[in-house]
Length: 140
Ligand code: CMP
Image 1 (cartoon, rainbow, N blue to C red):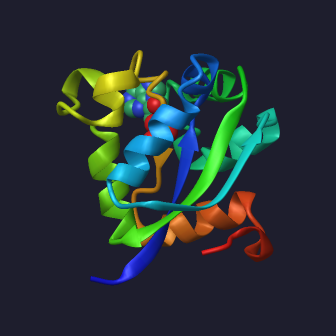
Image 2 (cartoon, helix red, strand yellow):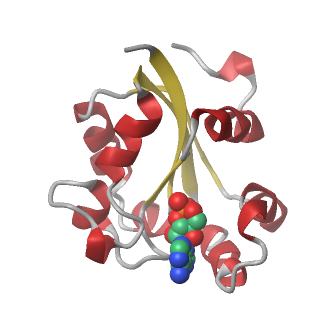
Image 3 (cartoon, protein in one colour):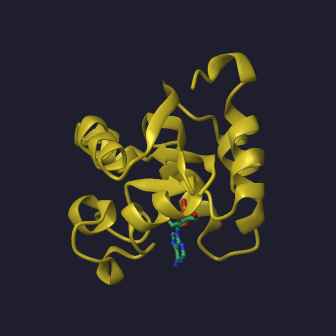
């Protein structure tokens, strides 16, 4: 299995509750390595751009409001089959549907305040990584 990269965001509900370390430990325990990480306050422009694929969805406005409501930690994760590995440890988008032991089951507050984002494909991972990181900031 090839070592690949994915993109992760620790969302404002998690940073607010001081869960950055706890979430990162879950990622590391799942076999993912943090090869880039920074804590940022997303601008509205960044949030709208990042989630542009959802702009016709009824929840888009609230999603953007939430993502700028506090700091987030953007990360690049590396590991074998990183996209799937990360999605498995994140759990279902809605914490009510998430499996035991997943990040969202343990930490998420709601479908919106669901603690983490993770890329859904390798193609999107590359786009999302480039949205927040220069190559020089990623050290594997
Ligand atoms: P994320 O993986 O960051 O991608 C889009 C986000 O929209 C998703 O996680 C959810 O947190 C958020 N969201 C808010 N409301 C909904 C909804 N009704 N259905 C799906 N996603 C939602």
